[in-house]
Image (cartoon, rainbow, N blue to C red; front, side):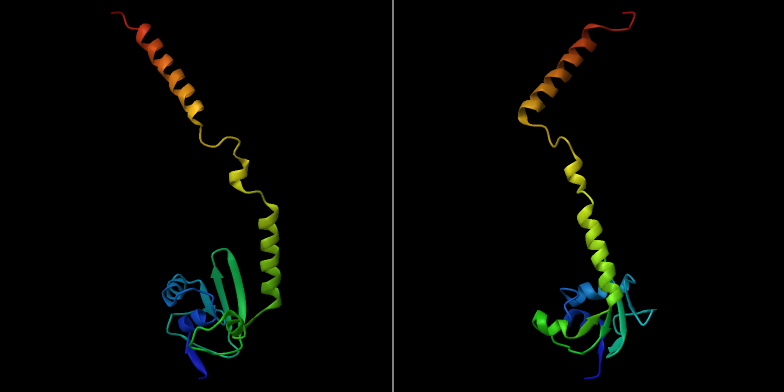
Length: 139
């Protein structure tokens, strides 16, 4: 076997969990072979340069083997070789994600507790009472 559909190869190389996910990503334009946008039926061969995005992760890999069967991860990793530039970009992106703070950690207060909720309700009820007692109308 010297050629295989790109969707099958991405699935066998374990870049995507299912072939349908691979097809969706290809249709969205997130997969290129040799700097050309492809369709799911495009055939890939040994030596092709495949560019793909998985969420925020961008990878550039060289096809080293062809397999139509999805095997264990160590076997799947032998089907491709990631370029040095791609590895450096992924490492830099991982470092920046690690150094930036989580947006959820910047929140000082989360949801109000039951006690806080009761005090808020009590304050709102007092405010409504104030509006009912004092009116700007001429009645």
